[in-house]
Length: 66
Ligand SMILES: [Zn+2]
Image (tube, rainbow, N blue to C red):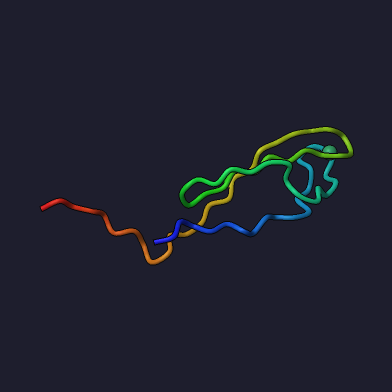
């Protein structure tokens, strides 16, 4: 089964400090069911992280050894 494919990047996230839109995150890291984004404002230089949570797809059945 394929891992969660995250080819969607958020765009135009407002800067947490000055509110200017930031075109794209400068860095991101995928984790199971969530993705961390690092934003850097070109206007004021402020950096902040944001995390996106994704719903489970069809759930993930627990593997129970019998
Ligand atoms: Zn800013």
